[in-house]
Length: 232
Picture 1 (spheres, rainbow, N blue to C red):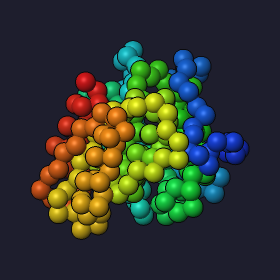
Picture 2: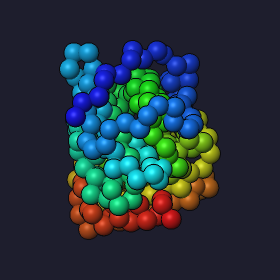
Picture 3: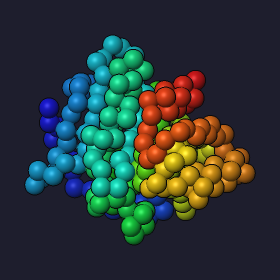
Picture 4: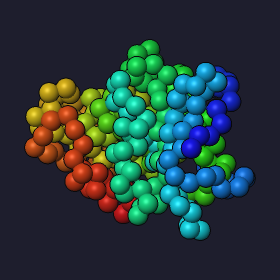
């Protein structure tokens, strides 16, 4: 199913700092359709995928999911799709405006504005009681950076095999889940997770960290552990 294109995004004053302007509020429009929904731009380019579980009167838990470098929104959605219905997860997976996320290329900007609009539209049309952000690889680095920058919006951060965390400013202290494979050949664990996690803990963040025997991947056990940790 396809949703209308996003409106033209206007620059936000704080987008270059990674700050999202949107804040949750009671939905003001009728509940949107359920299932896997695509959202395209005016020339047919994919802007985002959403997965909305069947409505049952209860609020959803929104999860903003961020793909890896060269990845797709579908790959991001698939990380949590098996658990979405049972755990009431409304999944929102944007496509980065370039080959990877803006922070990694030139600094915060266009992807922050796109995410702001996607979240605003979701808040307008769905009842929510929690808002999380997560990702894999470059998406995990971006989830950490965006999540710590906007810890007054996100109730938790999930980082599967991150390379770094680079918030320019921080707000709030959301709990953080990190997993990483000890044999990761793409983002080796020693200069990545084993450096990031102790730094976050020194800054006072509540971090659940798990290593696993494997490479650059997301085991099902890590997904289950992340959700149990953040939805406890």
